[in-house]
Length: 441
Image 1 (tube, rainbow, N blue to C red):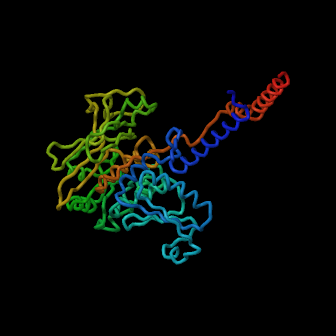
Image 2: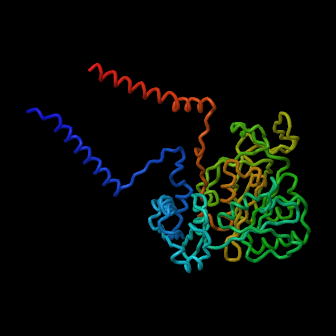
Image 3: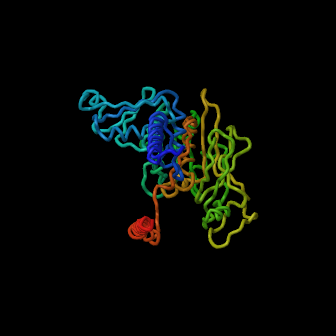
């Protein structure tokens, strides 16, 4: 028995409607997404996911925004990315018009301002993007406020400075992570503050006064943590301090032929690509670069537990001659073959706790001019976390590389021509062929 054509058409449309209704019902109960961008630009980065994994306990985000606004929908959609990886993250809305007292008590001054609460600690945000929110959560993870004190008065690299040789960008990155930075001149303030979590001595260009060196020695003897950055030709200013740490420097400047593989022609930029099994470098696997670095050497009789943290590869050495033209290692001039040590991590038990010191034979790698090279910033933050006993917060940053689409003039012309002329002509030709076919039938 042949089924009439109109009945077949009706049955087809009923089945199609049933499939669409089923798909709508399933989409309202289940959610499945794909992000096809190269680095997952529309989902949380690995950094944010790792930060959420560090948060033990609920996080509450309160948004002060009026009802019936598109802002609420945007915030809900954005926070949902975080909620997928942390189910106990709660989002709440408070209308500042209906509840002005609540907004006033929290110091809310802008519609859409966010208040993040974690274990009684709070952060306020006036803009919402992944970097800002993840950094805020990262700051809340810190169990205490850490003060980094940078020595000043001898031409040191400043944690607040904007010059190329300064460390201002690094200081800003640390502040985003919840670490406070301040400068200290030992002539103006003879005593290092008791609440100093870490003293940073970054490449002094002039020798310290005997009284200043005595204060640094006393700080070490009392168990203070120290980050010491040196540069070729400037290590003599801190020779007594290095001696107390059982360290000495090799003459000359490190050169590294391995950097040519990265397209770097300057051999005075040293490369570090492998790190020892140590809590300071746990899970750290980024290449780091060190311009104009100094090789270090530790005494076998050191009272510290010493770990060679940063070491160059083979085909590197400490060049004592001029860095120009073709250079080769000269063993007779005291030029030692790599691997050579650029940085040491040192620790010892002191006053019922663990004292930590890191000495790096380079200050440029954290400077404003070189901080963004390879994994330099990540390593710097990793070092600070270890020195302030917060190594559990070592999370490497990851930036999306496909946020901008760059097209050549030829590609732009082809796309424009295709959409403005070729595509309309194709549609007209298709319509003409269909019309011609129907007339012949």
